[in-house]
Image 1 (spheres, one colour):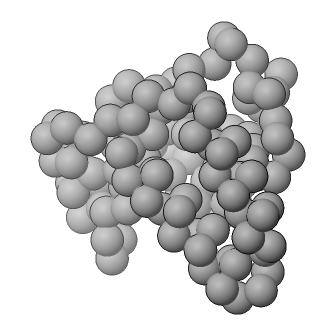
Image 2 (tube, rainbow, N blue to C red):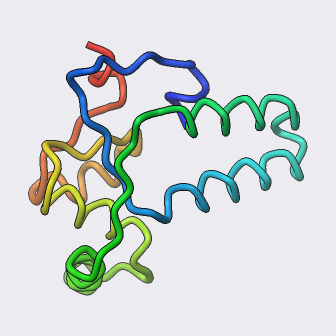
Length: 121
């Protein structure tokens, strides 16, 4: 969501990949923020429109799901949601992009982790 907050322009040399669940997660996050009074509906709509306009290749095939299951099991995670992003990175991407420092430490031995600011360079 940081990219949407910043209305950041991602340089064309970066190819963005995400699991197909990204759309539902972003919608649910925006809805929760509006319901909690932390975000105005107009701003939520603007962030959703920004993210919809990004060129993101969405993937969710069997191989990705199988890999996500294995990674979640290996790491002792309670579900596979973040594991889908990690699986996608191990299978096809150059780096895992996150601002979550705890997650970055946890997966840093498995994949290259970078903050979203690195996408703007």
